[in-house]
Image (cartoon, rainbow, N blue to C red):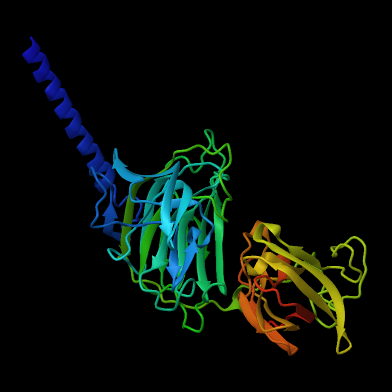
Length: 491
């Protein structure tokens, strides 16, 4: 009787194993064309995670909490992230890849000093093993929710031929804020080397359904990349197309005309979604069902055509603040106006339409006053604490900028001693702080000089864009005045 029972049990177990492999096969490979759009795309690389272990011929890992930029160590991966990446927070189980973030203390030696970290996680990548220029990148994933969790699927250049980040580009196929589990984001980073980089992108909000959909359920995230065009999809729904970018003085479509490799990670804390709080549950897991990468074979890749800004210029919105009679979008650039009901610097006469920030969270502190120079009034910014970022101390005015319009930003400035400041026109937090102009680092000297920045507004019109003068990182006093922003678009 016992022999019959065990033989029957063995047959059942064997049958279940065979059925499981058949299921994984058909789920993993037989449906490989189901997301490709009438066979326009042909599979060239994939991982279905159907084995028992991570395939080391396809994947490697980033380890630690930062990287070296030349000889300088950059902690927190440049984003103030709190996790320490290991190769042991990642495993294959039941046909999917699991990336797990844990709340646990580990110590690592950095620059000869033992540093404690409160979280561990994994960043897995195809760097040096597989990279591709153009194609369709498709990933089915399920993400964790919770304040301070930052799951991401993204691409970096294999060789950084146009220079260091972000001159050689970055493509974020999908990233999510764990505190806002109804949205995912697709973004490109480009322009010049940090801090003169730029980025642009859009978010996808899951539609209201019953039961509701969010990032904690399985979804297919895809990027279709052609010369001069990037398209983002969620579950087959196209939600943004990008065509306009730059890379220093390199010809378009640089930097997105070179091979990139794939990364997938689950970060904890940092500037993107802040740090975890008591509501965040650990361990948190990001699951990847499959990664599939395709070549376009149903037709030729499109020819890259750099967009002409005049083709997508919007008319100036009726509710935009009018420019002054001389065309200047900056109000009160002579620092002499006192008007109630508008922004001003508390306790400082003549500061209407301006505001001054010294951000304690970044160690910044300073004072502002006005001083006459060559019969003109200038803002004088004295730095008590320079902080750890340019934006630790800021002088700002909100100005309207219209999609597709070209602007010239100009001002005069000097410093007590030679030093650098950072100037840009950008969005606020509702626009994810994205830069509309090049982020321009300017070296000031004790000699008063004129500086200017030209840019075309690449985003939707922003009637409250920030004209920012970021003067942290250095204690040397700065004078800024005769500030203008003029629409120089071809008529």
